[in-house]
Image (cartoon, each protein chain N blue to C red):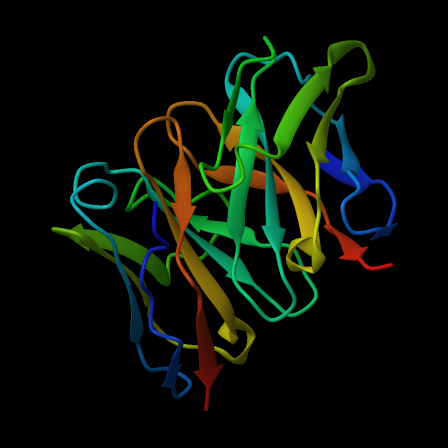
Length: 110
Length: 120
């Protein structure tokens, strides 16, 4: 069971859109539509932003959206805001009642 | 509103057992729709899933930690616990407890986290 692969960092200017990728394998991301995304501000607990690849919890802005193609899931944030600057982690069901996280991506809002 | 709160020693000696408890409020730990899980995060690093436990006591663990992890549940206290034995400095991390949606594998509520340092 290996961690999902995410870019270490991404950046964008306010108002722009960015996409964070999360690459797994045919044993996790590729076979299950059970990818979720978490936002973590410094010193805070992670917050659920997306679940089941594309669903948004109540209260999460519709500027956040998820998708998946093959073994890669993606989180897109549109209309970037200063408050979006944070770490983002993906996770996926990995079979055998186990779960795996990505290494995390730090989003910088320029 | 569901709330989770971790508690336990902040300092553990190498080779000893790390023990943490998570107290849940705003939801019954016996709810059939959720598992209860532990996740950890070393300083400056990413999240690592440790394992999960169901109200029945059924558990699943991260294969990389399975030999050292035990989870238990105390339904009368609405609490669940983590024991990690034979700890080393590599186990130093913030430990989070969280609620995990059954079948769908996402954590919708998290505790604030507690820092556990392994040092003599």
